[in-house]
Length: 493
Image (cartoon, rainbow, N blue to C red; front, top):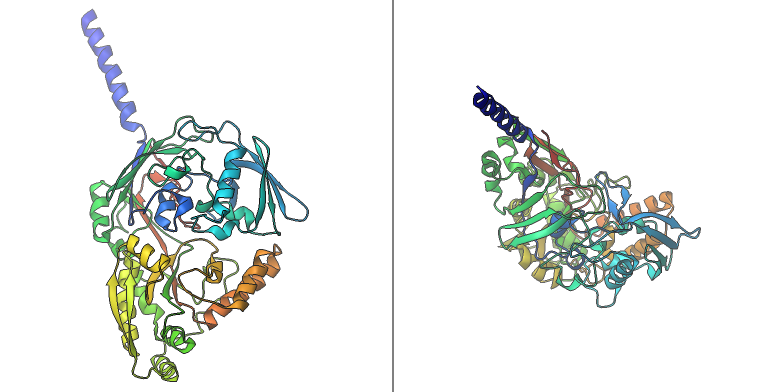
């Protein structure tokens, strides 16, 4: 009898343990992403895929951008601003360490900001730091940043992925082995396959729920649905809109249609003949049928735009009526430009489906007005090298997912090759203005100039189509910045 009771008691203990394990929330996650980052250093590359893996997860900044686009404290727990708006004094969290054990302090803030704004900086968003005059260390937990002039967007700028804090000890090797202060640390990068993060030891902030996250690289949109159905991948924060019908009514998944900061454009090389002629660029704008492009490249979910601003932005001006689809008007403008017989050009298309699908539609629409395009598919690394860096292109399609980035058209070395002193002056004035009413006025003027000049073919705002396991909580529904912030993500029990 005693032996039987002992066996029974042991069985009960095993059953309880098994039950506890069965109902415990899982702590691993596999996320599908369409593009592999060219490297893993947010301070040295323009590719959105870098931030989509590392922002807020591995690397942190003085501030951070929240899920509603708001500015939140991060490594800086607080700050004060001088009456003239030029001096920001940041109070830093103490006890913060980099993942290699190095202490984080004011020295690292000064190093990171000075490095980003240096003459030899390779930061893709170097303009974010242009207003900084000097960075001074007050004590290990206090940094004073003095600006050359007031800048209303400074705290927002410090929340970009390009402004994350790095350590002098590891800054030069972050491309292959990123070391930050975030709640996750880098574990492995299987090139062409996946990037794995694990929970960081002794994180200074609120602990995360997940122990391990794998970012699985899935360039083929046709593979998304099978991966979800098999459970091999549990979340696609940026899902293929054309595949949505296959999963939208399946109770195992949550489908979220949100907004992004992704202005999807037909970029034009403004200094390359014949695109250096205004009539040619305007003809292209008239030739574009936005509805057909949105229906074909974003399953009808994109929002049409007429300039470089998200319709979700409070300062957005609707300029979509400036160039209604008009084949005859497009042909007339080409004739004015001396190109009544049309011309040939190239269209380089990066891998995302919005580009490849949209490219076929746009090529057909431009053919109707006499512009015959040779479509050249390129990989993402090739696009960054040939188009973005070397400006070796005629036309291309891309979504600019950086937030509030209308100033890119004022950058003299930017791949659009656009030059308008009036526009540049507006952006310069904007950088000196913190008054919200005046900023709205200036941003309206800037949008109008870009539309009038038909700098690019403005298409639509990229929708954020997210599909993930219904038991998964905490993924962002909108994308105010290019990020997959995992700090609040967990499985329901």
